[in-house]
Length: 339
Image (cartoon, rainbow, N blue to C red; front, side, top):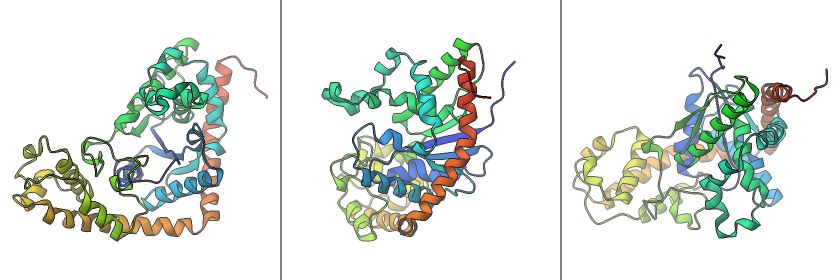
């Protein structure tokens, strides 16, 4: 008999740095858009993941609230969705340990993000950094989520989650955990660095000029777009003409993602013109979209107690789903539970 799982979307953002335009287009806006489409939506600030590398305690608290503010400013409604921070729901850490005993070392050794983050000094990395894909699997499967919106760089983690779910089910002869589907962001929402069109826009890039932060004011956004790296060629008449022009393609993709217009529609307006004309138009659109979000974030951040109340209420709702799943998983594994 095939078990039917309730449609449920889960995703999380790490409070390890400021959010960028890429986070908004590739994640936050998508998260808000999933609300009301059928599946239950659960969104998390994954603060347990953040401490896999050392964090200043006061800064971690501030950034956790800032991520929550960004979720809400981008349209995530804590009444429609469950919004919480991970460390308030003990089921995440508890299920992660169970999965540590299901996942294989060989699986962890293949995870490319650990190699990227640990670099040549992997012996000095925390055990948490090595094992955090198991925690990510627990984040997802504690809610028996059926879909996970992620970027391309996180697809491997969802595939590992599927492997862990399949091994647990096979080892114990059950169909308890689902095989969650990764919902990969589209190319139009994959925002690249303003300084290097071959690299993804990142909050960890040493150069602040490489990204547009959600906290940037209008003048800063305009200046960053004006200084964004481009080439000397005029804009072509169709998308095919952007081949081998990564910086030009990136700015067109940003314009497209912000307006909903296709690349060919945009080029129809700007064909033959240079970036001296295009960049001011893009900056105006970016400011129009981001200014209300920045303003709402500031309003939320001005009342940290209210953010804490919202996260606490969300954690209670999340635990009501996750804790029974963990208790049942423990029972399946043979652990005696209190009656």
